[in-house]
Amino acid sequence: WQAIQSQLARMQELVNKIRAGQWRGFSGRAITDVVNLGVGGSDLGPHLAVSALQHLKDTQIGIHYLSSMDGAKTAALLKQLNPHTTLFVLAT
Image 1: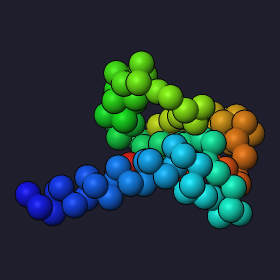
Image 2 (image 1 turned 180 degrees about the horizontal axis):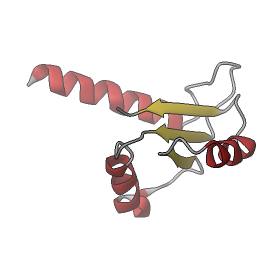
Image 3 (image 1 turned 90 degrees about the vertical axis):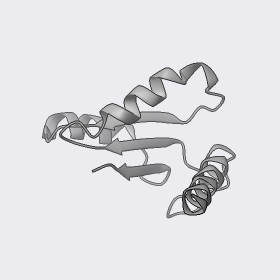
Image 4 (image 1 turned 120 degrees about the vertical axis):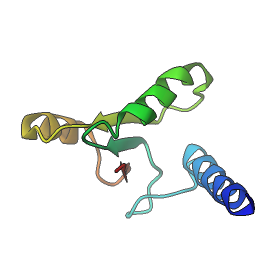
C-alpha cells in the first residue's frame, strides 16, 4: 500500500510540474503538448480518463493520441507538434 501511495505522489508531482511549466523538454522549454502512444487498445484508458475529466482542465496543454501504425496519420500529427515542447508517453 505504501509503495502505491509513493508512486501516486510521484505522479502527482510530475503532473503539477508539467502543468505549471516547470518540467521542461530536452531543450529547456515548457511542455505544451502530450502525445499518448498506444496501440492495440492501450489508448482507450487514457482517452476515457481525459474525456471524463475534461471539465477540470485548467491548462492549454494539448493532448493527442497515436493508436495505429498508420504513417500518414503519424506524419500529420508530428507536423503540428514542436519537438522542443512535446512529451511522448508510451502506453503498453
